[in-house]
Length: 184
Ligand SMILES: [Fe+2]
Image (cartoon, rainbow, N blue to C red):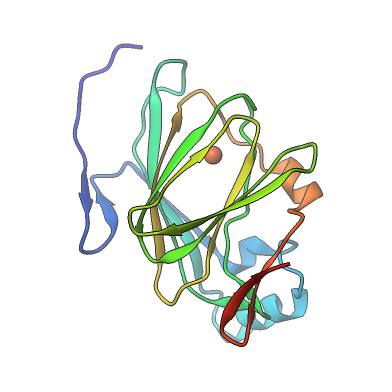
């Protein structure tokens, strides 16, 4: 589909996208089943009034071959038990499509895995550009004290497959041990 060119503004002070069409919010209660310490997550939902976990700001473009989707993804800092806040993680429905993540704020990791069980974690801080190759599921993890904010760009026809990660999980977790992030 042929559409008109357009511009959006990334606000580097607030680390948000101005003029986004869609603002998706995931609260702690959306993360049931993803953290090892389920009781700690329930406590956070209960005592923390189901706090904001991560959010995305997205612009609509046709979800078809040739177009590029992009979003600002922002993960709050924190832990569930001793496990750092993270996104659910996904493969792409069209598994053979990659993605680029540019870190704008904060610190953490891009955790990646393949269906064959390969695992990789790339460190992210402001200015890190992580290339997620085709076939690698990806999840971002905030190991810092401020929000971890990234710009992501991917083929618009890639789609999201959350179900396989919901079943498989990732082979490693990012935990806070005496103030240090350990990948175990
Ligand atoms: Fe993706």
